[in-house]
Length: 314
Image (cartoon, rainbow, N blue to C red; front, side, top):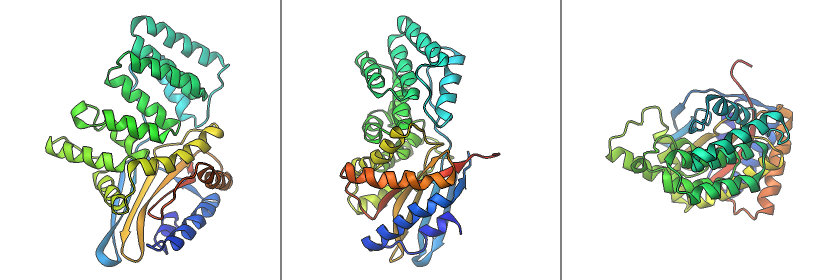
């Protein structure tokens, strides 16, 4: 049975039905693996009542590194894409720290930003925040800010991402569409919709971007008074689970939006993890526990689940 078919069966506006169905999805995800693609995928299919069921999958997150050296860029990128945290005591991390510290003498903001990214790949949150705070105090340029945005996204600090994205993601700041996918991946649907409206006025080319998906998600969530902050707070619980388990997502989440009267109305985000399908149940059970611990106010119109990802060609 197709994973997406689960979303099309009984998830309507009834909060109990929505909760029950998504609980089933979380358990079901433990027995499946989803083959993902590097292509942007937007599907629009007519369902009952002539309403849209939309899904979207975006390319993996790529950090727009401000180059210190080609080797530094490639190594950090590879460490993020490995899917798990690196060892802070490794020779590789020691070399990267030295490279970032040396850069501080030539370009302080870029150096502190790079050093923060090194601490990110090893999961040292306190040092990451210290480095980024220092860089922010030095008035970083747009490239450094985008690097910070993407690094926080990798670590699942979704509320931080939403706040920073609202500051730097506008087309008028020059970071659109680079920041758009990162903002969407961390729940900034309303902000993204407003940025898309600006981009349309400025006649910015948005070919290949999930514009319809973003606008539809924003419209659905706005209908139920679910702000970006509310969605990000929910996603923060998922990020906390990933940090506790010292893993990164395999790629930007898949976003599913459906608006079918009496059938299914809501937005669901699927977070892909590089692991065996049998391990996903523990991630979703941990997510439910973390939602309770963080007192997440859940709403039937939005949910997040983990699923196993198998990269193309594996």
